[in-house]
Length: 467
Image (spheres, rainbow, N blue to C red):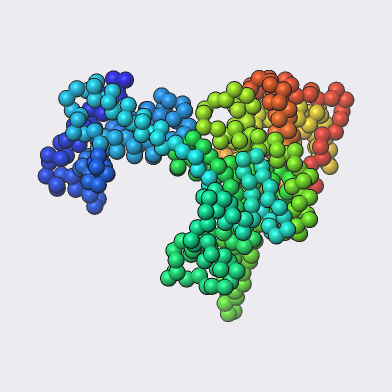
């Protein structure tokens, strides 16, 4: 507590000193002007210093670190902003007594931070498959709806139709052309979702807006990654959130051979899965149990409190984190990047058990001995994991220069293993949590059926593609 009081005293002293100093001293603190903090009237501001801002940042970070619930619900940037606003609000009352100042400041800052928590519904455009003829579906707290249904969702949630909706519908139907001179609300909304995209709808309660959006995006990515578990590569790379980085849809290629004219062409990198609505509906229905289990894990990730009484939140967070690495691997352009991401996903899933931990967990999940074959050429699970984990270490440490390696087959193997283990793990975790078992990695591992004593074959790995 004394440290926080000293940090506050330093911020107060620095700010008062800057207010008393010539403007040129403040200007020299930064370019084009020095730092400032909002005044209590929310209109003006006080000149301050870099040292004061650094003290406020340490103070805000420390307050979050000492309160697990706030640490989960409020982003670092939001906490620092509220610390500066609190100082600006209370500045005329501070400076007489260091301990009393801190008591007053802390109470006001905590009030501000807790007031930022709210219930927000986030809408994120995503690429999955053509939504025409495919009904809305959900992966736990993440619902996927077609673009036209999105406006109805907004209207229902608001309780009234918005004035800009007619213009958006006209733009989507082609009755009007979009241009920058039109209604900015119509232009912005109409351009935000394409005709072949879905909208992920995620309601997050108990977080401040920035952290709420971050968790909604993470939950959406997790739901998309759960879909990727049952879509073979390379098609699963087309499943993504619209805001995620990826190759541009159209890439121009320009080249010239000596003595020849310029040659030009282009390549397309289409988003979304190909196929008709029947295939999409079948994909959703055939894997309903997977999506239900994944949805339960994602829902726990969106909880506002750092702990919950049931549902195995720690094991759930481990699975969601591992799934995130798997998704990065699916979307990676370079094979060596994908390989590392897939193996990291398995390392996270096994609680950092490295090669041995991954191998033992795989044997339990597959119900097959470590020396059972997993590939068509007879490669055993033991040798398979050793090979993949060796790539992870050698690529990360630089003994394998990934850019010049031909790793497409190894990538397919690693993706298959990661998808299989994540898939089986979440189904087993669903049963484990439903039984009220301990939220503990060792307890979960012990609850998995031991490998059969006979040389039972593990699930067959890919021969050149995904699962």
